[in-house]
Length: 340
Image (cartoon, rainbow, N blue to C red; front, side, top):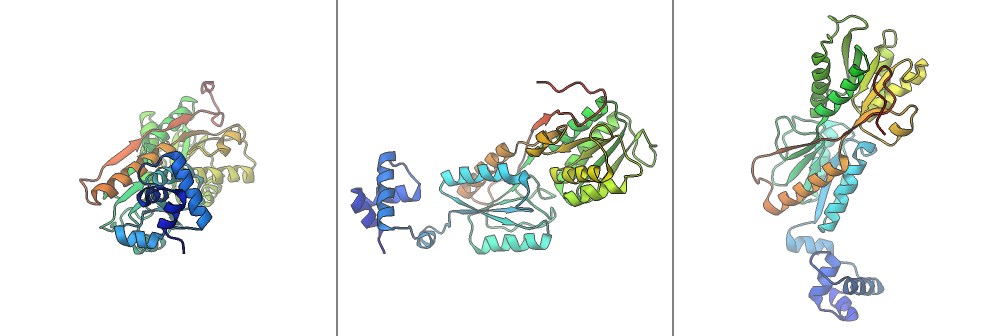
């Protein structure tokens, strides 16, 4: 097997320069780096990452533990995470818990067994005691109580803002379809909804009557739940549904198709998240878009800092990042037209 010394000799550089070029850590002139990498390819040289990890007691790997690997909600954050960590010389390994606490436990243990240097964690079980001895930063959701640094969206603001748009349009019969109470995101989004309806003086059922009331339908952050929730109230529909996630929104719209309902003529809809299909689904879904790329950037910066300084560096902090409201045409009524 070719050695690093062979690569350095072929590229006519010192072994130290060849090492920096191959590891991506430390400055090497771009032309020199290109020559070294071409020499490595010509010889078939590959760095021995196992030996390097043993020497440094570091794997240069960060784990990302998600509830659902297929959820487009995490795509932007994960892409930025990977880019920032790669530039710093780390690889990102992604694992999914399937929204199951036991799978989440296995995922955490697997990452620890593989000696990752840090973990970005989107928790399923908010009450879980996090492992010690490895830096952890939580993303989008956080432990209750807070156990480590967390980077989340200001979902209270976001749901309050889109609910306020529905109220401004004259809606006084509202329903929030949301996930389970065991997630921190549920509490934040529910609080935002309640802020808006309470300020407007809209009562919750059973005190409220049809036409002047709000309902909260609590289940899961899944399209199945969004669809089931709508079918459950099909005989007593509100004027507007606030879907607390893009997956729930998809289920709500599936149910509208099932029931022959037109948006916004028969039912107004607003939603959390901002997948691309919100723009192209007629008539365009009014939504709150979390700053996913910025959240990924901040989480990457924080995990790099924690890996540098140590897992137990200081008291945990919460960073809430505010996204944007996209006003489209899915809320009927007297709401002003979206700005250009």
